[in-house]
Length: 270
Image (cartoon, rainbow, N blue to C red):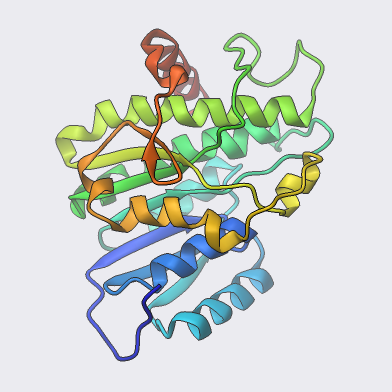
């Protein structure tokens, strides 16, 4: 990982959601340590945002860092961020996720994992697609998972099924991989690539909520997402799913009828 030792121009801006979490912070750090990048940290908690920013600045010597407070479960919070944003965006790293043990709804009445893990990704891309087009060639990286499956298009919010946070999480990560394909098709003419990846198995608040541990360090988990954000391949490939810096066939993304049905379902939420 390279580090900034002097002031350099920062022509490319990367926005990282969930930046105060274990994996999000590691991704933001790795991008910030790459010459030529300014990084905007999206967090919900001001204290965590400030401490995360200070830690990344110490580690990378990159002074071109800032944070924004956003709750990705709420469309109005995302819209407010987009409205106050100035200038182009070059990299959107959709990483934020939540896994409440009990079924929880947002004030708008949407199940929280769907609202954050799926609609949060969808709404961020929609809200920033014009900014990404201004920064083109630009990239969207959706942090998904190999732990994915069980999507029920007729019961996205677990109103019919018994809620289980692991099942809801797996569904959300399948959805993220499918939305990657949907947006790759729609944004290609704007020179915006959209790819998804599995970051790694890290012990984090999220993994512990799911009842798992984790054998990898956050720094290891950041490698593939940051690689897609900054290296040449991430600007050439689109609509792909990656594990350990390698493209892996995604059966979820290959079901184009389901991909379109999911996109339309997300659209209906607004």
